[in-house]
Length: 258
Image (cartoon, rainbow, N blue to C red; front, top):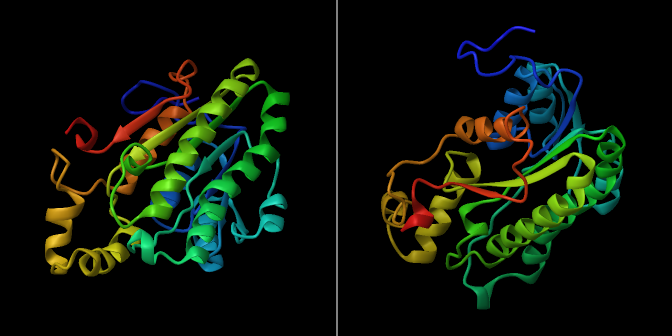
């Protein structure tokens, strides 16, 4: 097995493993799929966007799985033989709580909380049988802190934190770890699409949103790149983190220190 240029770990340390990544057609999910595939895993590229899922799968030699995570039947039909699960898929809606559409709130919980639960309920028996598994939940700084106008997203991210910790406790005797990564604002289509909505919610020009809203609490005044998040996800699946479980790792530029 060849070594990485930095010599810290084998380049293909996930050879023989299967990774299921949701929301993998773009953004953080696509970067995670690329990183896991480069480490030797066969990646199940799960996304509602069929063209994007197939393009990512073709690029990395993975398998595209087109599924609507808001549909419980579709989630329950996903492959069950994943050794690694990266729960990443998400969506956003920005509005004051008293004006927040209940159907939108329900949709966000279904995609970002119920779907990860159903995926883990389906895949954990396979991990337990093999005596090894890695669960990485792409949470958010909003899983640790709240922001106005994002009641559904903040609620969902706090919920995934709890799901991750229960998974860690139950999975530990079976060689399964479960952790959250908690990025601040990442340069993804989801964040880019938020700028106009945030501008309307806060009553300010779009050009001020990144500086005055998104990065106000962060010490490092830039967006984090999807590849940076993916490298942390990969590290959590690697040989040096078998004792790390039930944790939430802020990738927030100092937001939660402020």
